[in-house]
Length: 374
Image 1 (spheres, helix red, strand yellow):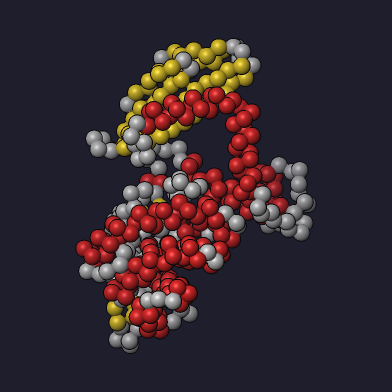
Image 2 (tube, rainbow, N blue to C red):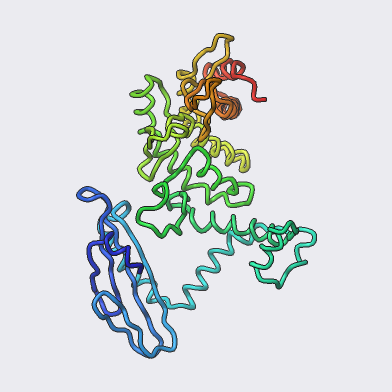
């Protein structure tokens, strides 16, 4: 444990032999309690506790089990951690490894990528291969490895019942991580999930869909209170509590009302790959509600186009003729492109469901008045 971590937890408890529990809280009273458990199981030798440390002495091998839980999911996270450690202890290393490999291969083995010439540099250390590429060389094997690594990241950090993959995924090591380890929904979250359908990891998409559903109720309040509009809206960032209001104070990103609209395209993507009519019944109301907001929100320009106003082109600035910098604008191209895709998806979905003719007609008319996507 790094020394600078000590100020982020309250105490180290010793509930049982060869076990330590880190107790802490995020946010003070009313915040989230967390517990992290460590258990050492040695083959031969012995394990003893000295203060806040476990000492393993003269062992042939040692198995370290780590479990963590918070009050986000558990009324008693410490009990959940201890129960998890107890279950893992009863299974042992060989069983735990076999279960992990079987679980991982069930997803990983669905797809393989073979490229001509990828065997050329096999056997060389990765650092040597990377330097070869930096110098302008080609290594098809590294291309395939990067593809596999991307699938590994998604299938390891986003499974049914878990939280979605965030900025640092499950590998975040900091109590105060960059950008709070949240969900930046003006590109990062979407990028995390681009491999879900195309790389045959549809189950890994589910946590994102769960988050979108949690965003609907706060998104309705944000739409109503901020804009006087129906439907639901979210801005450039959200978190596990599904916040939808503008966050931060950096104007090139903060004021961007397209977050929910872009996320909803993942629902349509999942349906487009699966053709699952039952899934569409579940996804369509969410897509419709995101589109409904923009039917209220869009502003007509002098030439008859419908645009978002005000908005921003995410994380971009522009320079005026007088040299001043600006961020807030009317009708950024990215907004129109996302809306064209969302309206098109809702139009197609309503056709397949054979309902919402008036809503569909409103979308068709609004879509025809969006600025050119070119």
